[in-house]
Image (tube, rainbow, N blue to C red; front, side):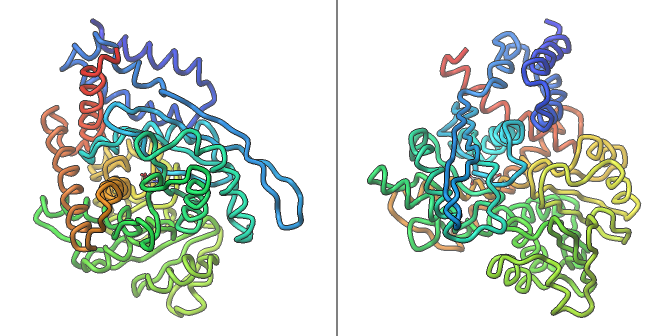
Length: 448
Ligand code: GLU
């Protein structure tokens, strides 16, 4: 069987069917070269046509979300849930509320989620959902009515053993609370249908911190392998949401100086190291813009309308934690000039494909999101376990389990890359290791 031809034909068919779904096809294009390598070694999976089957989402749900604003006007948004693959467990993945949300964005996110979830070693399939609703600038009442309307439809498609959503951009504790309350009222039971719940009802310790901490744990294990550590390192972080805040917190705790954070309006540079408590106060409590930061910290500078990735300054580690395609090829070249050694993605697909190529050509160790940011969903799966046994584990226990999971993910990515003669190619390592588990499960379930 001609593997190159087989993979190329799958891509061509998809390009025709999903023409214009740019982000989705980008995620596929990142994935397929790894599949060529894998299938050349394991032709039985190509013969069974698992790849083409897996690429087709099991179910795509789209629905109307009507809601009333504070002035009494009826408004409408689009809601989605992509139930991509359930071979290794119930669909699992966040909900994103952001104006950029469309089918392409959610399909890319759900596709990546399959392999991310597989890498955690826990029994969770891949899914994602959300809406083009923008919580920014909306009142609490508007957000509540939107969430209630969203769940009025979504509840028909989810359940603790079938599909378990969580948060993502624009969906934090407030939104999870309103969604959960609505599900409970309609279905008259609750346990475990959403993760990322507050600690007062079924939430897990460490879930809030998990994605950011997990990304830093991943890098710590990589550094450890190089007989190095975070101590004294300069770290540049983008974003100032949940992932970013806890990545900064853990990196600083491990002895690094975090120089930056950002939002969609601009970025802050603080030579003394970002004051994470202040960022929490601004973003988590007051829901204000990051420009407020420099009102308190006098040595810090706010760069309006600029990207963190345009910063020309020496640093060791970059953690893109904002959103997809935030770091392009030209900016990747700036990072190389700056002397960056490691780029680890806290966000999903923040680096464009071209940017990733620049890192590879310049021996920058690049850790793709599906491996480096798997900590969030991993602790979500631990939240599901705790909900099932009606128990809550301690912060130390969950944090320790998170660290072990990130260590395993790092090692499996490293070892798989080596096995394929492509040392340090963590993209290949993550894709192949993530795919293998799902593909084996599909085969054994007779899904071909
Ligand atoms: N939204 C997160 C992610 O991208 C977490 C999903 C979850 O906890 O289900 O992985």
